[in-house]
Length: 269
Image 1 (cartoon, one colour):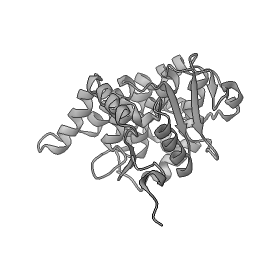
Image 2: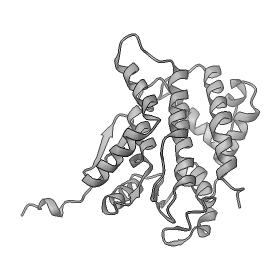
Image 3: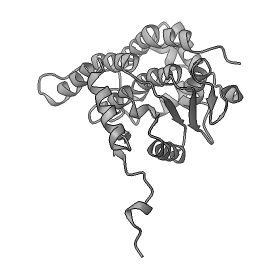
Image 4: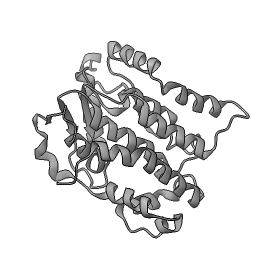
């Protein structure tokens, strides 16, 4: 006997693009609310300008222009949630997070905030439409993720993090920022301090490496786990001039990442 529509698992709101999974809001009312937030967000003009240039002849934007605009979107667009929901490292964790926000309208993953909505639809990891390589494409997401964890106003958060990796965004960025968010008191129903063992220094070490580097040569010789991950994926992505890449990473660290980390993350316990 065929299953009724009500019997089907409610994960149909997730769409796919070449850059990965895109998230639609699971409830009609919530979707309308998200669209209102997007339409009123000051970062919308930056997002629209990139899309307009992408599809209009004679308006192609440079690697620098796209990267700087994406970082500004990540640093200025609304990425807050009443109940932030995190997931890490595995498709199963991502599916659980999707299901949770479907069943709990007050909850959001970063992709169902205006900032995440903008970044996802820029398809920064899609080489057919974006000139950024993997490391550059990750930087706006790191900025947005830091703010998502640090600035969300609710008092509780949820995380699906089984088998999370030390170089995952959750362990490198979100859990440290979450610990310093005075609004957020619990994680998965427990005092958030219980999760401090998940801290990873990989992101902090990568940022320090960029800060002390004098050229791309220094980064090319890096043995840090995060840098090695980026380098292992370089051959599968867009090829970027190394000096340009270093200059852009250095710009992002000085302009956005280090100020946010100083403001929002405590020392590793």
